[in-house]
Length: 203
Image (tube, rainbow, N blue to C red; front, top):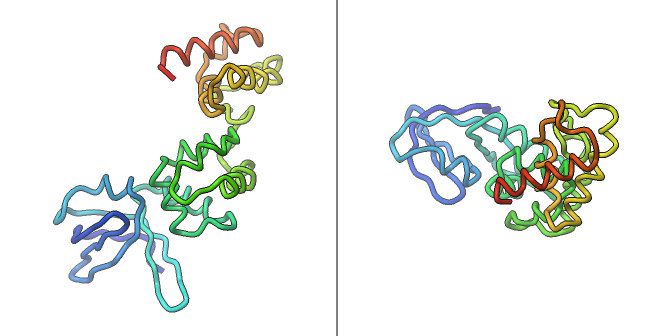
């Protein structure tokens, strides 16, 4: 199994490239994000590789980062998300955005990827909600935990922002960025500071 390739960028198009490794050309399928970060023809390139067997062929899928590769592997555990659909999602979003959308159960965001309809977006969000990096309150990062008295109010604050017209992912992201040590003491503070942050970021 091929796990990584380092060589010279030979040719590329919108969905794939050929890496010349000591005179041998490997056809590798990539997301548009990875392709856009590789530089120009003739330049050195390194890609992490997923090697997939098809009926009568060996197909290589390449990733600029291991984070992107890990996200691809997670996405393709969902029924209906094949390798090409995984790349479509990674072309539309970076891994962090995908994880946040899943954690926030923001299915509408996922449909922005080519080929992802509402049913598939719902399946992705539902099946992966407990598998994305550990998150709190529907997408609020546990790296900066809320006091125990506020934890039950996080989802209420997110719902309030959604009711005010913000997308769920926007609301979750805003709440997760708040200073949670001294300045947030109540649901009112969560909502007020969430609105203030959304206004400053122009969301």
